[in-house]
Image (tube, rainbow, N blue to C red; front, top):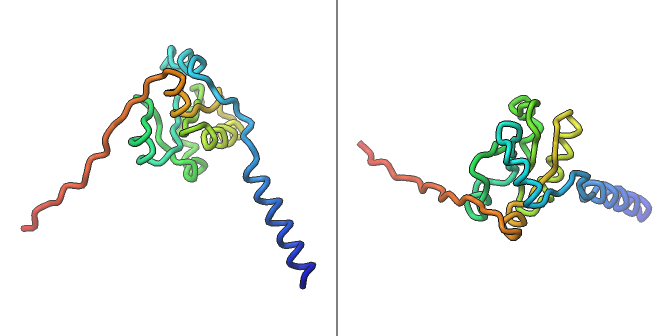
Length: 138
């Protein structure tokens, strides 16, 4: 029984270590992203954060929003003729998304952390999420 527990524990630890592995994608600096954004017809930002994170922390004026858990289901919606930059708060989730996209044949420049970009002097856009409006019953 003890051996079975130990084997199960070791297998779980190995699986966790693989999922926690750092991303291979390059983490882009503010200046690197700004260079890419200078040709907006050639680049596509994919923000993998939740909408509340984008509204709270800020984001970029134009992006495709696909949360990381849904990314693989929506690969056909992502154009292959653009340079892809993935966005998250600090580039960790963005890096994992960039790795996934690169493995599927997309041209990925890297990942950027929106909060890191702002700390480096970049400007983010903040949009307030509209509150639900109660409708009057008839």
